[in-house]
Image (cartoon, rainbow, N blue to C red):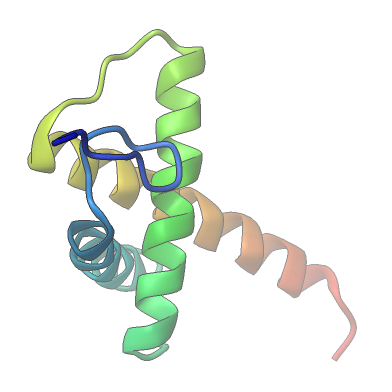
Amino acid sequence: MNQVYPALGTPGVGFFMMLIIGAIAGWIAERVTKSNHGLLTNIIVGVAGSFVGVQLADVLNIVVRGTLGHLIVATLGAILLLLVWQAIRGRQPQ
């Protein structure tokens, strides 16, 4: 019964660690994409980026293990999400 259940497709990462990784990944992605938002948005973007990153890694047959691996994948996914968001938002009339 000591099994850790996956959070958003990331096996071995518990809920609180997912929040920490999400916050860090979101913050890094915010800096890379020159965005400006708060802690809650960083967490949301980082967690969503983690999901996207893990799914892309799975499609590319890349094994993601450990906290550092999840942080890297979450950061890359969050950057991708923010770039797509900026591209979509840039096309909308203001």
